Length: 438
Image 1 (spheres, helix red, strand yellow):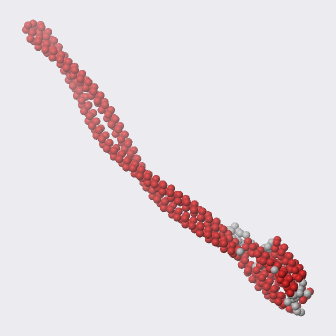
Image 2 (cartoon, rainbow, N blue to C red; image 1 turned 60 degrees about the horizontal axis):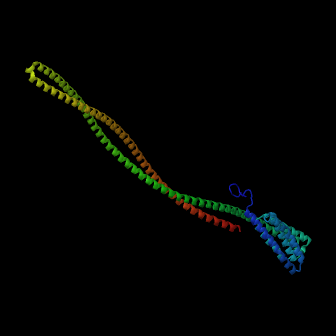
């Protein structure tokens, strides 16, 4: 009935469902119209002193063929033809029961006019041929059954002429009416399919729009959460950036302090080195004093020996030599004590010098570590700045995405409303189709 595109093909002559239903209805109504003649014929037979049995038997005989065909296929063209021929038979029976009354012939023209409702030429043509054949045959066989007066064959031809005069335009009208029925069937089919498709599409649009609106609402909520998280992240990044700035300032201050400490340490190392050199010089001087004291003691001993050899004349000189020896011994002991103290001081100074050197090395390493920490903090600060820019871009993107999602949600709601409206229009269209098909 429909091509692959869903449209009825007019050129192929495919019958639509509407045409089938229409033919079934018309055939049914036509058969009922024929059946309604039976009580009328009975009354007519009683009124005109005719045979009721003849009216009943011939009526049932005429109804038999259309009835059988109607039960087999109510929409067939053969059933329509049978009804048309039976209609002419009923007209002929009416003329017969009325004893050929000329007024009864009007039923022929009424029936021919009613046959236009089939929308087909064949039933009208066969009905016209049937009534023409009836007039000729019955004029020859039973003329009183056709005319209530003695009619000539010319009169029969005049009746045939009027039948042809009605059959020709009736066929044309029937063909046009049939074309209208066919077009109406095609339109109905199209409207029905379109209404179903529109209804299905509207429901799909409505459902899809509803789901899209729900998804958009959820997406808006998630975007709000993400936006809040980005704000917190931005705040944390700003805090990290401020902290890195503070650390850089502290590192710079500590670098200055380390520089001053290295300078003071260098000064202390120079002083300790000078103390070491001074201690070495003092040690040499003390050793020289100790040697002098030793020589003085030797001279004192020699002088005492010479004084003893001189006897009484050298007694006084012997006392002086003894005192000089005592002084020399005390000087030697003081020199020895001083040398020991200087040696201890020298050892302490050397230990202090080593500690100062170790402290200098430690301070150098601390300075290098502070430099590395400063470089890493600078890298961290640069990363924080990049992260801050990235977070700003993310916040801007989230804001734009939020606006887009809100617009999409609004469009989805409008689409859902349009889908509901379209569904209503599709249902209204389907109701119109049903009314047109009724």
